[in-house]
Amino acid sequence: MPAFDAGRIEVVSFDLDGTLLDSRSAWRRGFEAPFARLAERHPSLLTLGDFAHVHDHVFQPFLMALWERDRGEWTPDYVRDGWRLLLDHHATTDHAAADAAFEEYESTWPGLMQLFEESLAVLEAVQARYPMVLLTNGNTTQQRMKIVAHDLERWFRHVVVSEEVGLLKPDPAIFAHAIAPLGALPHAALHIGDTRSQDIAGARAAGWQSAWINRSGTPATDEDHPDVEITSLDELVVLLGLR
Image 1: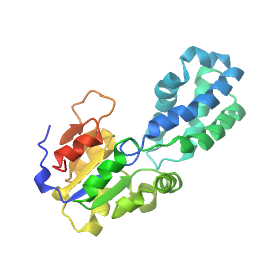
Image 2: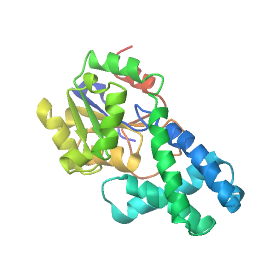
Image 3: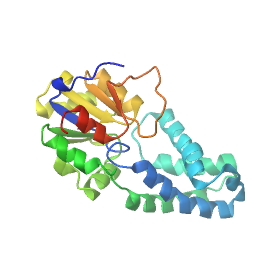
Image 4: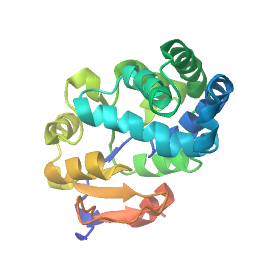
């Protein structure tokens, strides 16, 4: 693993989902009720396990397969198609029921979004020393909704949403775009994110330092090495000498 050098850092960049915002828990909890209603209509879905298992190990892989197929900007269309695939593969084709589940899911999960417990305290501590950037993949409507709902823009000098700039992590160009208004050189920037294939690979390709927040204890692989691995944003504060 490359050496982390806090002494070089002049700018700190944060990912949003899975880093500051506990999106996965909201998506999982939002999945529960529509999945239960769908399973009443198609009982074969119950053989897959409880809603949390189905969300994490069946539904989410469908979504990622759809995204990998297109490599485009994330849109709710992937989620709608994910519900359809869930039925197509494990029950029967019933697009009306799948679309109803999708609509219920989309109306539910945004209200369940919460920041991780330490997020605001860490943002306050880091902001006291460094200018900060928020750098997130996603469509503008949903990402801006999350940012506004949690009053996050006030912490950052610059907010970059991939759909708005036509660039997508791990493209190093989006990292260059994010840092340009701050006038810092790439080697003086640190990006913190939870996705190795997007956050870590992109930061390293752009010449930035990278911190992988691995809250779930996922085993490391031989690819996309971060400069440092942390399990909580609180550890970042210590690494930066802010506590």
